[in-house]
Image (cartoon, rainbow, N blue to C red; front, top):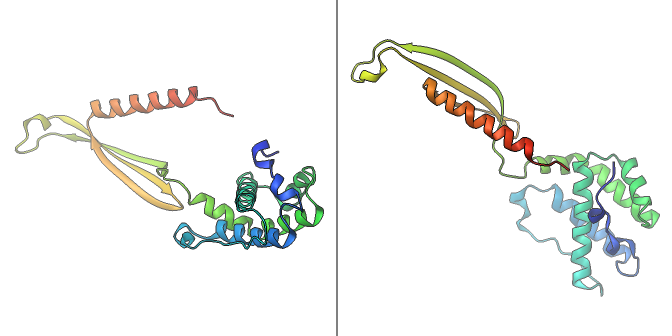
Length: 193
């Protein structure tokens, strides 16, 4: 598996004249620290002393390193596959070794932080339902002889189990199923890359 050209466009990291070795090491440590902290802990700024390196180049190198490590973790690269990939991008061997070593030591923490990103809703992992026939309900004439469905969705969000429960009539349940089928059809039309 390969990473996209945009991620592999790490020209600021390749050139030793643009990004000296001591700055590279500091920046790699700062990127690892930035990626492995929880969002609450990221209030502090990670300063890398530039020693004559232009600020824009340092920022771009920081972004390049961050993107590279995040994408490698997202695609579950191991140390050897990342090393093999970086050797084809003309990065000096000792930089590749340092980068791969730092990545391998922090891969699981980066992946755990990636799981915490986003505002996705929980995934439905189970459904329980039961049908209740209401024969009579005092004070509400429409409930005589009606069916009610009690539904409970079990959801999982960030390894936490939650429950969503609701009651609906047959007509409401049919509307819900129709909307779910519409959503599935729309999702099937979206092209995947």
